[in-house]
Image: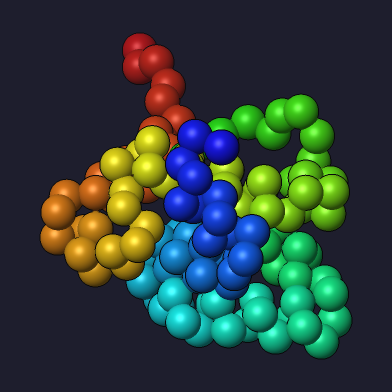
Length: 125
């Protein structure tokens, strides 16, 4: 509950939170509106929206080099989807992103430089 605005938005309209997160993680390849609409449709018609958002949690882990703790991504999204979405949003904020601005404006302001984990390094002879 550190950011009450994000918590409320996620509670009442999680498709917006998800759309913003997805746009950043997809590096602008999909818009907030498109991702949010897909999420909303999955939520309304199948109830399996958590599977879609779970894939983005895995994507975030890969892009930022975050370890899996305390349980697998699918369990987190299945048990508490709003909490998982708030975690995504907060993690992007910690990485100097402003998800509400979208990908293009974040790149213009210099965010995204650390979108890739450090390359594997080896010792030379």
